[in-house]
Image (cartoon, rainbow, N blue to C red; front, side):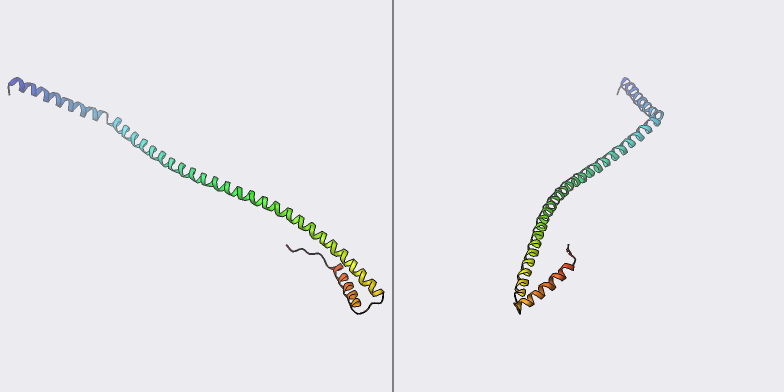
Length: 153
């Protein structure tokens, strides 16, 4: 190697060494900035992790809310159906109550007519079965007149 080459090589070495020294000096001088940058980077990473966790929780909450809405719609439909069934049952019961009342009135009229026939037969001198029927009808009508009407339900 020639002297010129050696000198040139030495200058390059000095220049490279100068660059390394400059970089080390800059790193030492900017140590606080580098530390602050690293701390900021870690803080941003924590915040991103927190955001990701929040997204997961929001997604889970959203899915639960959708399930709740579906259950509410189903329950609402069931309640609506139950209300309609209840209204139909009330109307049916009203019709039955009217029919029962009509039947009671018919029975009352039949009891009066039967008692009148048995009473006339007894007054005309018929004995035996007519007398027994008259006594049983009289007893029944007296007992029924004093019985309270009770409903089971």
